[in-house]
Image (cartoon, helix red, strand yellow):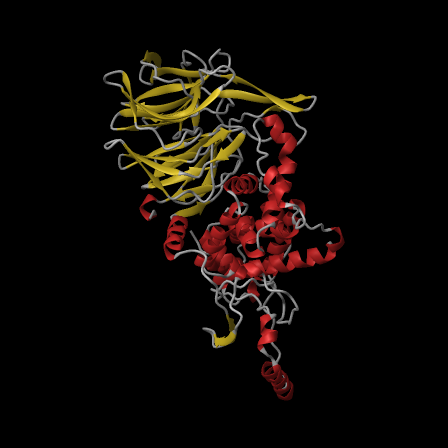
Length: 628
């Protein structure tokens, strides 16, 4: 994949497609910064467009293309400052909000779709108030991390400070927020739908522009230059430590310290108070920087130990970002064939005020080698929560449900119909073929052992007990279904995978024996041996969860993310746990950068590709070998 400098060289040679790539790579970070500054998603989108248009026009003036991310930050920040000046009378501060109100409101998580719709705007306000209680430096980093979905390394390049500084800020911000408050911020920012038409809008305007050639510098008159130099020397000689305490440096691409700065066009003196959270020493001294210039030297009391910092850096560096999924959807399935990932079905989000079918039949193929997406032939039957498995290079899409939304007097409701449908996709011919239906319609979990597909448990809404424990087997060679031993416990939304020819069913939603309690989040693990047709219990996970994933690498199962609810509080998990079937033992690994549920995973070359999660379209790669 080309770096920024290579893309910029192509752009300056007249290749606008390269600028399209550059926009897609940086647009989420710029949009997150703009939203953080102006607190309005609509205006943030406008500022993001203007940022890239200005960058395109002035691209030839960038002396070091490797510093494009930081240069982009300077442009975006200046546009935000200009916007704030124009809209200053309309701005309202959140600083006076009582802490008690925030603490009470931070528990207001959704428990159902209807309540979520009614409280979405309120929860956005609460997230903004929680962020407003953080110092500016931490607030910006949290927004870039959760809303912009940027890693510490990417934020480091964007803001022009070290990775250690970014991890310090993230750590401090998380310490200031209670766990439930941080989860709320993650959920709100992570669930924001990025403007899908932003790149197209930018590129349409770029088509009418050409980058401005670099200005030719005019020689200064000798006496004028001498006068300016004399004035600067006088200013430096007359400056005292009192003035330098109030001096803010312009943006530096080499910055590695922690000072909070405002981006300005020229060096100016500002009469401002130092932020108390920076905890700087009273004394300051001038020191020569790497470029031979004069800079401010500051020290800060470390708030993170070396061990904690190294752990945070290691945990962050093992994650990389890939090109987002083209279609935003939930409840989709993924399948790996010949090194390529096929994303199939799911639910799409209708526009506000629209109702009807939300299940989709869309199929998109991802090529990890080129980091590109390609549209494929749609599945004949639109459905969500479809389960897919591969036998002999063919993808079998099994079960799932059709879902539609219905307008109600106060909000909306949804109806679902479980399906028994089985359709086979041939990636070589890009065609679908109808196969024998399952014996019972259901949303289920599938896996393959000895070229046969096992449909394990699942959900059937019309049953008195919707969670299912039954297991049926499909033989593609004969296009027939048979029944085998049921699980010990009914479950849906579990994680299913195969190790050494045995099927592991992990966690999920179970059936409660307590009257009035519908869901039980499971932590137990059951293992099925097809040869003996028996299930047996194994060591449980450390915590119950549902809509998590299981991926097998070197005979070990990586269980990633998921969710659970407790006391009507929604918990989106970022945990990574590894189960070793040989020892029947679990170990904990460093968390994901952000919690995910309903995501899908595929193992490619020893790395775990994570697609989506909640309503997001991101694709992230987890490298277990880089884990501390």
